[in-house]
Image (cartoon, rainbow, N blue to C red; front, side, top):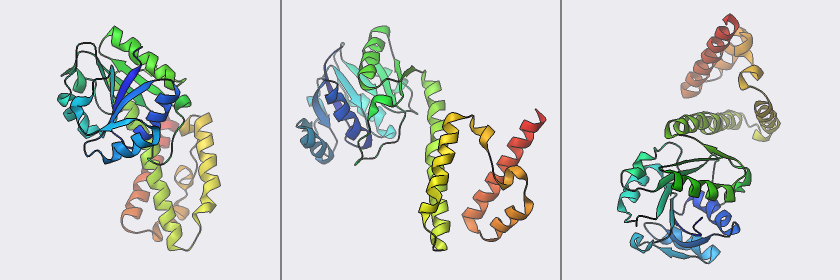
Length: 258
């Protein structure tokens, strides 16, 4: 595999990707960001060159780790040789966004949540890969295997489905935590009381089919408890409670009929 890379983007993912690439023995030529400041901050930490001039990027492999909405524009701005490879790291963006402009294109999508100031060990993070041709695929697979022990080949359509599922299980779940915290705060109750429940629920979901561990008043059709909850809620919280209660009832009613 080619040893030298450049990273376009210096956000949440790049802050975990850069140290993992270096630990794997790979050379990072440049970290690029449009305004230069975020790239310089990340590059300084690891003694790498930073740039805001995309024309300087001539590496064998270029990894686009920007926001999803920027990938197409960044891809179109790259002037690559016939041997260079360009990858993006997004779950919801088709590989076609790259192949419209480049022969050797691929996807290196880590299925994990990233925050700028918390480095994530990528070794156990699932990486979903795709490539435009066999040679590029072998390069992408080799790169992914240097970063993680969990590699899966997915088409763009499959990856979009996975990303959609991840939004439900991660982003929407975190919103539920936030709503729970809002309810507790309004009644002067510490959110820490919910942490063991959150942990146990996550453990059960990991070791079981999620639909088989559903509990709560909606599943039991406990009308009295449901009404008591609704009486203390209002606005969007009440709308959300009613929607999810109805969804749980309908889903498990259909399961019972099956």
